[in-house]
Length: 277
Ligand code: PHE
Ligand code: FE
Image (cartoon, rainbow, N blue to C red):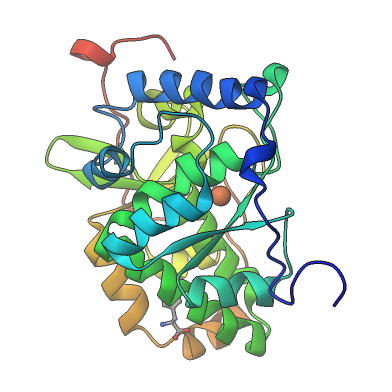
């Protein structure tokens, strides 16, 4: 191939970032770290501390060396969305594909396509957690399998409702582990405190029957009891019979609550996080 590689990776060209681009990163970074204590789960906050992403857009090669020494994961640059098989193959081999571009100053609050801030700030700290690191790799392997079975539609929902928008139950109340929330200033508070979205206890089949909408704020979040329980149920369950059931079961639209759903309450405003949502 003349351009790029078969795995769709490209050079990050870290030296090519402008001061203005690094500035967008540090603006977003400062905003998130001042807000996330008490909202993000411990695994994320500890990962952030271990990696120290404060200095501007990270150099993937250097970041990967630090990450690899913790869990064996690396970060590779890709031009944007990559084909499904390429994406899953990267995850299955503990490589996280990240966009290299950064949003502009007037897109600080929301953009639809993942940029380097979402991909690195949102996703990479969780990859320092050994349990979550294993989950992401297993997900990649599961993706390659689902692709062969034609059930990516269902498996992609699992990624959406865990890796991107997952909430975690802790003894101190709900916390965030989903990267789509953690990289968004407004949704971080909304996901935990706002009374409007539904928060339902995680169920594998329930999640895979639920379509998702690519809005800025989700109307539905699924809550896991622990990262270990998420890893256990996904690794120990053979998805093949599940996919066979899903092929004939109807979807459950967002907004529908089933009788067997366990609905969780939002957090109430107390103490330091008593900021408006
Ligand atoms: N156990 C799943 C399967 O049989 C694979 C998987 C693991 C999928 C973890 C997602 C997350 O296909
Ligand atoms: Fe993402």
